[in-house]
Length: 422
Image 1 (cartoon, rainbow, N blue to C red):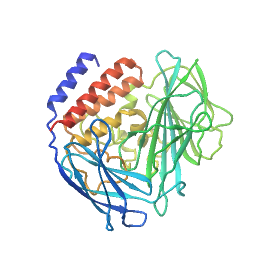
Image 2: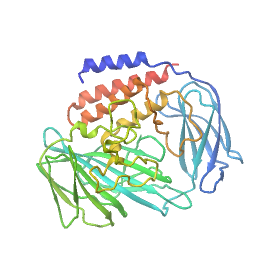
Image 3: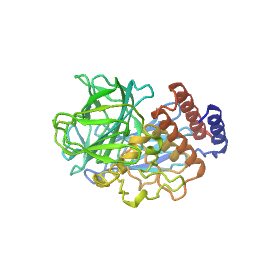
């Protein structure tokens, strides 16, 4: 996309988005402890103002029945944060919100019933062939009984190559939306932790990093607990070789190759060597925000090609399509390939809808994902498509860092101005 075309698009989006009515007054709500299945009394409730960063506004405490009332002193978009057992839980409060319901859980530093569903790595080189770009995704399932949140100074730890340079990271809680979350370095080089609560259901972590590359590179995932699936996605121009007895099976795809290992125990040999150069083609990344392959229309509920992919993307819903089918990663691809653009795309979809949070929506996320609709508004779909395409063009090397920064900043301005108009 040229700069002038992009600017015209931003201008059209800005003037086409209708104004959002902002409301002032009060927000009432109820907090329920899902571990004990009763109202949660004594929890701190804070209204957070989202304009110009996250600013705490007013505070209160839940009563014996878990009820609270927050004063809303200013117009705009807010989050309601409930702190229970030292763990934060969020619900969005767009303009017009009058009430919210928040579900919380008791917390512990270690909770039984937590396992890695998958560790998925996406590899490609930059255009120079001198840097390897990796996007690694961790899918963590909390199936605790009774339901509890794992939260501490290192609720989820992982390993990266010692010479990795982290370029981006995000986390996604059950029923929530992607949020930027920076991993914290631990004592040993290459060892990191996401300080992000692992709530009941499925939590996803993504970290993007680069490595020096001279035409061949040896890597190896290092899961810290039993893992259901290790998957390595790369261009077909790469040559792959398992190292040290590692067992990977090749799954052919139209525009990529994927190597998969199953039922991995901690300490298992998972080393591999890749050589060659190349980028994953853009059409391999055409998945929509709900995990389904894009169809080019506004129907986000369209079935995947072939109709064989699992459509259950609820938290803790399992691995979806069996790993031995032609497309084993249908459930994961939207998160793997779209990257951090979802942070803006999903926020845009939710806040531009102008709808208050519904009590039946899944709690414990920073904000609920955009509900799927048979016919998404063309304007919203255009905005989401452009955000997606921007990140894809960057990942495939079609944009320089300067072009990416300029275009992303312009889209952010459009989004913020649209949200703030009232």
